[in-house]
Every structure is written in structure tokens, then in C-alpha cells.
Length: 168
Image 1 (cartoon, rainbow, N blue to C red):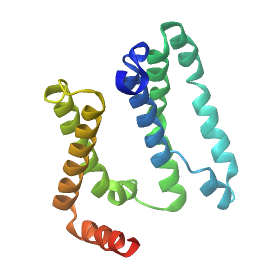
Image 2: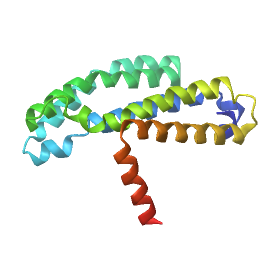
Image 3: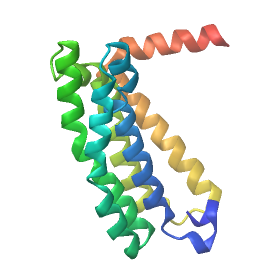
Image 4: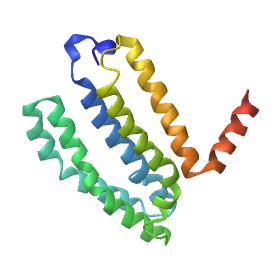
């Protein structure tokens, strides 16, 4: 974090990680307002947002302890994900595991890449200088991701390669 943000922002990477993780989970599971409106049930969206209001006291309390704890409190909203999944699967008459089946090919390699990258950046490349650390971390992460993606779904990698060749 000190390479990009300077010494004053030491530890900001954890805040950014929490924000990114919360938002990415929200985009996957909780963004159904257009769906509910299209199906003539906009009141569902309002009710779900009212559920989120229950977390506001936690957010307010957490502000007294700093930005990191506020982000932890905001992350607690992911506890509503099962409600979003159950409601969407009920409305669409789909299995509650349908979304998992759609995203597991991408999600599993992502988690494996994350674990390896955190381990590698924490263990091996700490002694590298600034931007070289970032370059090695991102390159290593990309290689691990595509290797894992290849192991999980070769046909997807072949399709991506074909699209890349077509675009270039």
C-alpha cells in the first residue's frame, strides 16, 4: 500500500479488500431490483432495503472505532445474501444452487489465486522494491488464475483465447 498511497496510508489495502469483497458479493447476489421491477414486484426491493436498514446502528457504532471497523460493519451486510438468494430463486422458480452452478468455474480459480497470491506476496516478494512488488504479484496472480481456470474448465480458456485472437 505504501507504494501506491504513501506511508500515511499504511494498512489501507485491508480497507480496500473489504470494500471490494463486499461490493463484488453484492453484485453477484443482491442486485435484483431490475428483476423485481420487470416481474411486477418492485415492493420486494423496498422490503430488502428495509432489511438493510437494520444494519445502520452497527455502522454508526463502528464509526467510533475507525475506517477499518466501519468497513467490517459494512461487510456484515453480506449476512443478507441467503435472503436475496431464496427470494430470487422463489420468484424465478430456480434452484437455490443455480447461481453457484453458473459462477463456480470462475469463482473457484479466483479463490485459489487469492490464497496463493497472498501467500507469495507475504512470503517471497516483500524484499522487492515498490512497483516491482506489484508487478510480480499481479503477474503471479494472473498465471495462477489462468492455470487454475485451465484445470477447472479448458473449454472456457480455449473460448477466451479464440475471442482474444479475434479481437487482436
